[in-house]
Image (cartoon, rainbow, N blue to C red; front, side):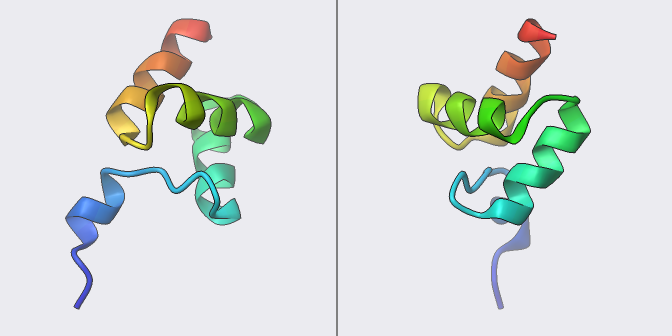
Length: 55
C-alpha cells in the first residue's frame, strides 16, 4: 500500500496529471509549475509558497 500522505507532500514534475492539478490550483501555467519544481525541489509546500509569491 503506497504512503499517500508522503505522495501528497510532493509534486512529481514529470507526472502530467500532477503538474496540471498544481497549475490549475495555483492559477499558473504547467511550465511555471515545472520551472518551480526545478528551482525549489518537489516539496509541495515549497512549490506552492514560491508560486504564491509570484501571483
